[in-house]
Image (tube, rainbow, N blue to C red; front, side, top):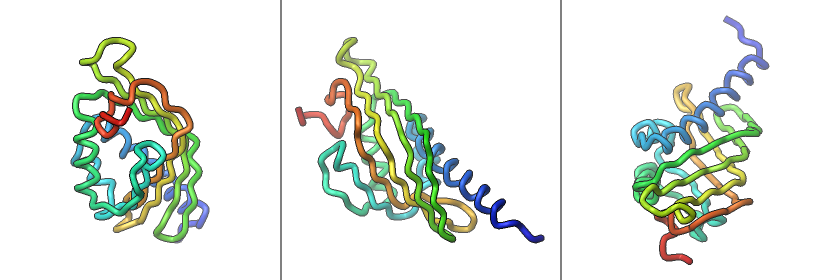
Length: 157
């Protein structure tokens, strides 16, 4: 069956956005198996704007471990919007805007939140018809609240 290129572009664009949203939802649900299903075996990460750590390549397992430790005990809500997707055969790039709300229910009101907003830059590869995230860069435009809420930032301020 012949498929028009425009239809294939729309299908792939939707699948890329679905992968990024499912990735965020998996983090909020702390569904680490679901998170793993959306990651390539190795990921280039750049959270230097948020955590002041050097951009690097990590395994999917190391990436998940860092999320498990940093978000332990927190309730989170990731919101993703304004996705701009660029497709090139079996690779894709997606720039999007985000908001992340983090709540530590064990801290007192006024000290229990850390919220950020900015841009994500995801790169993806298509493997067996499934889009996998193989690159993540986060920029921060807004940081509001208590940095001690996030495990990766505890002790930094």
